[in-house]
Image (cartoon, rainbow, N blue to C red):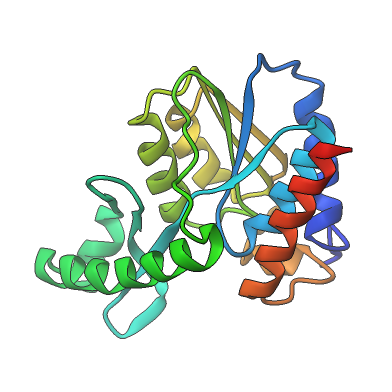
Length: 220
């Protein structure tokens, strides 16, 4: 299988150009899902000359299969929890398990809020065109939770943007946003990382550097 993108930054630049062609109404806010979505979101923000913010969301892994998403939780008051009913039925994850795991993931969300925002509040999305970005979508649980959390805050327009996604997942999610922009839906689709030549694990330092670079770029 040949890679579609050299790295997340290249994917984000291409995605930014596709979004630019839509002539979306302002004011625009780019919200990236840490950590992998941040380099993508930073590149989009640079193309659109828009501010970059974060939307903190965590996968809830199935019992004994932490990489298989049975649900996801996104920051908010209250937090937004989205459950994949099919995976839940297959894995036997009950409501008590999901709630307990969500509480543990909320601890990590709180840590990231402190590290990434350093005392600042979450961006205000009301009345803005909000572009929610990740580096790709496989099952879609985290993105679905993110979109629902943003929708609850009444953006003027909600856009989902990803470089690559599984076609069936994308079809199932089209009603979650006002616009969906995806550059590629390869088949077969096994994992997001297989479609990047460089798909290294993004750490906190890279997230902070991307946020700082995005802020500086808007001042130029």
